[in-house]
Picture 1 (cartoon, rainbow, N blue to C red):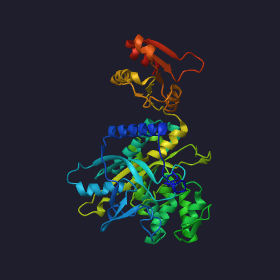
Picture 2: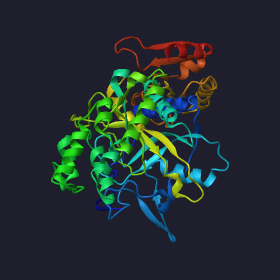
Picture 3: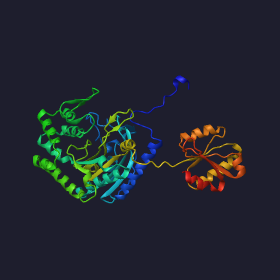
Length: 465
């Protein structure tokens, strides 16, 4: 390949490589999250990355004329297949397919990647990891949803967030659906109204942005136009006034629609059950939470951080919700022979990772690595004997793989890998049955090198690592 035709390394927008400390922290967070899910009685489930498109549905789309615009879809023979955009739709298909064998209620968790064909931004990716917990079956909704709220708080605290750094906001879709009924808003406009309301707390939106989306259109800072729900000024005004109400009692007095009253009662029941647990103070009502996905039809939850973060360019950004979800009574009933309600929540692991990297509040357990430098190829067998001793004692270690490189280049490699110790043995050490260790993390200028009898190797190494 000539110079002109050589490839330029890079990634599509919305995708990123993760390595070193960031990947180690992500794996630690996933381990903490999974252990907490298991502690709450949830069982693991893994589903394929692809689903048949008609099974996964088009609940993500903003564009009615292009219902699969927010996903990655492909032809597979006579069928269309789609990369999953969340873990709830695959769960619905799985439960419908296997409900006779499952214990009901079925409490499952899944930690897998999902894919969304949408605009990438601050802590917003087109491929990212979600950690989901769902409760499927005919249960007491107040208990199930309170359990999810408790699980969210418990898990985020276990991950290293402090209580004053996040809040679990809850609402019920029925409240605003009742208001929409009273306003006689047509069926084709309802989901657009819901999605407009759901954007209230998004960066650069606020009440004005929501009002624009409720009416004809919204024009963002870049000049991009998003078509609105085309409500009248009066209809939009009543919804905006609703969004300003913060008190559950006030809402109960003002909204008399039976569906709204039902949603308020469900919230009251949830809060009563939640008060029996340890995390009641972390749970707050926020009636603007309606969730953008169309399959939610009751309880809704969004967990927001109480601090700002900065992106790679040093600009302050709003991370947004790191954990959200809600109740879906009809998602599974789309399939033949299954009419099973469900409720669930999802932690955005990569968004949480972004926040935790900003805070630097959680220790990353980086296993210290020992490197064995190759001073002379004729002693290669001896170096491998040392390597075996280290690995047999569960000490992370490697041998340098190019004996032609001088010691300086070998130590440069060791420093890039952040090795803690270098084993440096030459003719004198092997003749005298000794080992020389160099502390690569020691203070510059101090004597960071020590030589000792070979039989003391493990004791000496452990003092350093």
